[in-house]
Image (cartoon, rainbow, N blue to C red):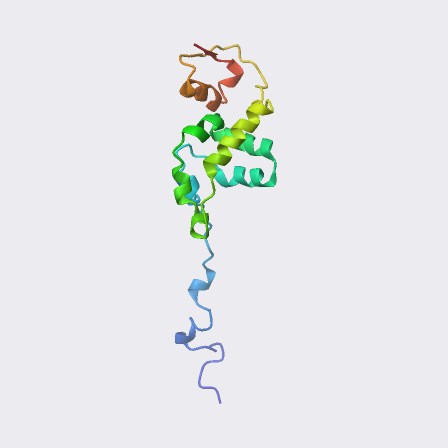
Amino acid sequence: MMNKAFAVTLDPATSLQNHTGSWRTLRPVNVFKLPPCNNQCPAGENIQQWLFYAAEGDYEHAWRILTEENPLPACMGRVCYHTCEGKCNRGFLDESVGINSVERFLGDYALEHNLSFKRPTRETGKKILIVGAGPAGIYCVLACPEWLPSMPVIF
């Protein structure tokens, strides 16, 4: 009749073949990794997100997302040496996306359409002095949202 005990139905060697065994309880682990262009971007921009909205024609939304990490896209689109384009995955298919050209366009679009940053919701009464109105000083003001309610003065 049966050569095995009633509860044993498979040979131990068939565990991998039948997808059984202790490893069957392991689950995939979701690992968040940056795309190569985002990883290469010195400004740390979320390139895929704002490129998606720019491609959809929603330039204002794309500009708002872009300015969360880079408050001066018109300047950066002109002076950045765009190493992100060299890491673009699209380059393996045909050509890399012209990321800095789109960034420059969004900056120019914001200037032409008078887009502005959102105003602070409350005043703190504190004053902050920032010396220098170059890109670094302006970035300092815009990149620190906890300062915005204090209305910094730039010299």
